[in-house]
Structures are given as structure tokens and as C-alpha cells.
Length: 243
Image 1 (cartoon, rainbow, N blue to C red):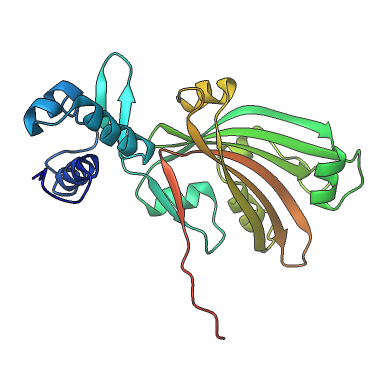
Image 2 (cartoon, rainbow, N blue to C red):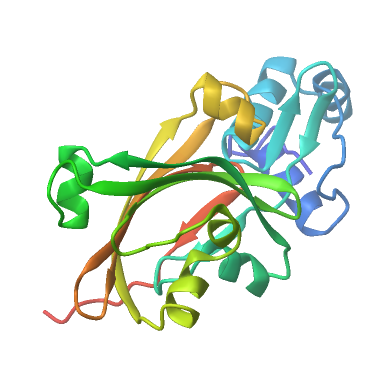
């Protein structure tokens, strides 16, 4: 219930009320919530207050607006721990979701200085550039652009990268993947990527760069990814360091 006598802001009380309805399953993913007018009348509060609460929940990824249709309960985000190195296909399979990959582009290019540095090869060396759309249960989740040394992945095909590259490396090439360095930053999606990810231009996304290494410390992969901010979140378990 919302109390106008409470020291807690009314918009925050409404946010809490809606979150509790979702937690109790009274509102389920995909459900249409009351309109601003209906919420204003239901709780006897101003539409401006309702709008602030709804906007905050949309920004948190709890609700999602659809132009001309209304505001809906968002589908839960896929949660991935930052510890451990796994492929997208492995992550989705563990969660009981069906992974799928669509090849956007597959070609061999000469490496730029930046890509060459990341892969520890000379500038101008031939590398595969593989751009893939990653889906889970047919929902677009991320766009991945991978750069792979051509002399290392001789005979690489679209069919191989259509599934799991890590599975191919470990089970077909019989090599051991050791570790990776990954950086994350927040951004907004541009028009071209927004269309591919089924997002509105300017929606929040996570930009991720990963450099992966074999057990001999040889880099074999440089990946730049764009993950949907409304469908993905990362978690990390942190231990307090000794003083």
C-alpha cells in the first residue's frame, strides 16, 4: 500500500509496490501493467508521480515500454558470472535456453594495427573476421565480432562458427583454452545494431572486449561484443582482501 504520510517518496513506494507484484507472480513477464491514468486513479496520486516511477522501472529493465501498446513486465535478464571462461552456447545451455547463432558476416581480412597487437601478430597478417548474432530461445541477445588468426584456424568455415568455436578448438584441434581478459563498459546502441538486436536506437547496451589465450599463453581470439542491457547482466563474487 502507498502511504502519503510516509517519509518515503511516493514514486519510490509505487516502484516497490510494482516490484512486489512481480516477485509474487501477480504480474508475470509479458503482462501489460495499468496505464498511467489507471495507476493515478487507483492510488490517488498524480500522473507525474506515476510517470517517474514507471520511468525508473523501465530504466532498471524491470518494465519495458512499447509504443502504441503500453508498458509491460520485462522478461528476466540472463545472468552470467564474470568468473570462469565459457562460450555463449555453453552459458545458454546451462540455463535451459536454446542457443542459436546467425552469421552476419564471415570473411578474411588483413589485420589492422590494433587487431594485430591483440593477437600478437604482425600488422597486415590475414585474420578471420566473424560477425555473429547470438540468440537464446530465438531472442536476440548480442552481436559478437571475432578476429581469429587465419594461420591458426586453417580451414575455418561458416558451419564451424555457426555452432561453438570453443568446442571446435578443444575437441577438434585438441587445444586447451586457458584464460581471457575481459573489459566491460556501458553505452547506447546505434541504429544499425539496434535493428539487428530488435531494440530502439539509443537503448542501453554493454560493450565488451575479450582477449582469449591458450595454455601456452598464445592469444587466439579478439572479440568485440554488444550485449542487450535489458536482457543481460553480469555478476561477480568478491572476497575482501586481507589488510
